[in-house]
Image (cartoon, rainbow, N blue to C red; front, side):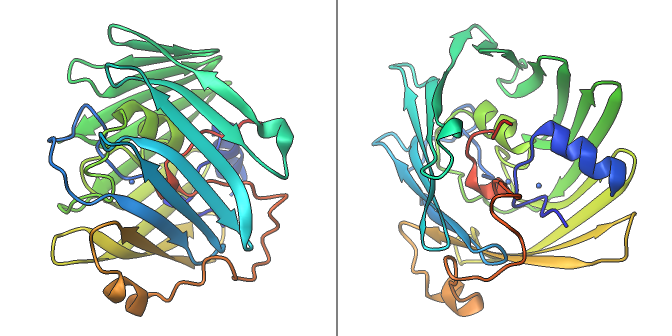
Length: 287
């Protein structure tokens, strides 16, 4: 079963899953309050044995993400910015799948950002409101800077994602990477002011994900447990994750969920399940 908070799916995968069968939660440059608070330095998905580490520049912008699987580097992604703080390029390196290597460039003009075959449109509040990627159109709605609904129209099919949030700080609250990047790469599970608590994905079926967090004294999540159910089978699955920050002690997080990030055995084959956990906030993986 798909872990919708902790994976990234290309839209074709979403449609296929719903036909037969969810943030980096973070603000981004447009929503950041300018405070120099903690930064997320590692995210661990215990179910799959993946972990991702994060590096930032002096302006708290995400510059590098390194994902590990089974004790070795699985993927490296590097982001670069111009003098105005706009994201201008994303480079990907995959040691085992060099066909996925490459660099995407972004050009911003007013409230429009273009990248190869994609066009991103920002709304009056500077939040990502619409994406057009070839024949796929994403329409996005917000409440209090949280993405509450995304409608994906794809070759005559429609998938709707709705979600609710807590009132706590998201792991990337102090990251100043533009918000549109997180929304785009995570189908709206990242790039929000708060943390997603429920996600309902409907198409030709319905998948529901709920997540419960534990928080530190400063109000940031340190662990999460997600439960998934669907309308097409009776399976209930759970996923445990851990968040590690640069200025907090990780003792409480480690006690709550021991780190086994690179040693989990799973019946999920890496070759057949090239996912991105949502809180990783990385690039969209294309076929």
